[in-house]
Length: 89
Image 1 (cartoon, one colour):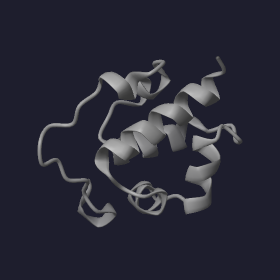
Image 2 (cartoon, helix red, strand yellow):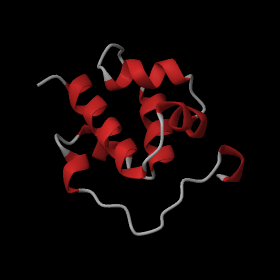
Image 3 (cartoon, helix red, strand yellow):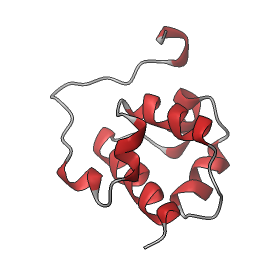
């Protein structure tokens, strides 16, 4: 399986678990909403910087996005809230 597919599946799965849209994830990560869709469909090669931005927005470590089916075994603590871009440090 290609790494782009693994990363895209993990991002989509974690986003579903947080119950947020591609648009909201893009806002939290400081990226364009279309880019998130391209990533989830494995249509683009991501930079390390963008992987880090998305991981931070999803509140996971960037290397966890590279683990096949990581999202299946990951559970967010109850009542986790994704911080707005201006609230993050």
